[in-house]
Length: 108
Image (tube, rainbow, N blue to C red; front, side):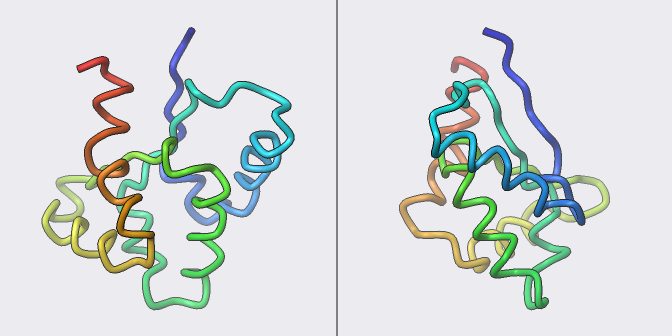
């Protein structure tokens, strides 16, 4: 029942987080208590050669496992919101990333 949040989706090691997506697809483990936060990491990869790959890894983890994080005070939260909105995630995923998943994690 322990909930775990893995920060920054691994940042520059994000490809190794693809193993969680593979485990989820194979139903090899229960991923419902594992979350991945996007704290500022989208700001590092937007408009870079890694943007598509990073988004693919995030989508393999599942939109229901992703959490928004601003990495304040390093980044201004409103700037990071705009980056995530423009990163290429599906529109229906954004409400989960920005709101629903945190509510579920925190049992609010």
